[in-house]
Image (cartoon, rainbow, N blue to C red; front, top):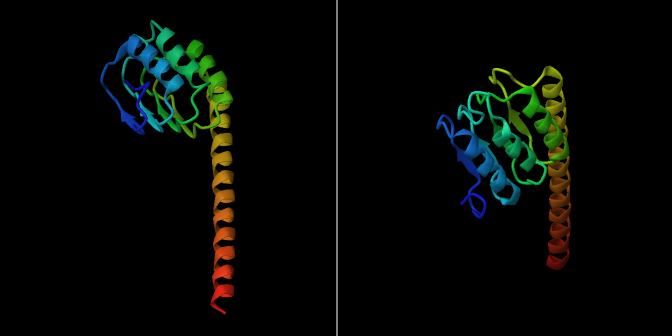
Length: 155
């Protein structure tokens, strides 16, 4: 359903004990979904208390292909350093994520992995800001041009 949904922009599933299989399915859906902007999966036992990382790894790998997601909340899911490396690679390749929360994972990604993720997210924020500034300048230039044309025709 999420895979084909073209309108959903924010999905809050915090604290629903979704499990490993749900993480896999969400990963599959994220590869094709291009409308979702914010996904909160905090406290969902997506790794079976850290014992099974395959679902969360599938979710991480999907971030390579997803270009719409801006916010991803995955705190308190038992994500390990092993899965952390998949997140590092995916987020470094991703250009849209501007907020990622991996806090509160018991056997969490390493400090180095978290630094790399933070650097990639910061790069994306700066890129998004630059795009918005350029768009604002272009809109202002168009407005000025239109204003001058109207003044010319009113004379």
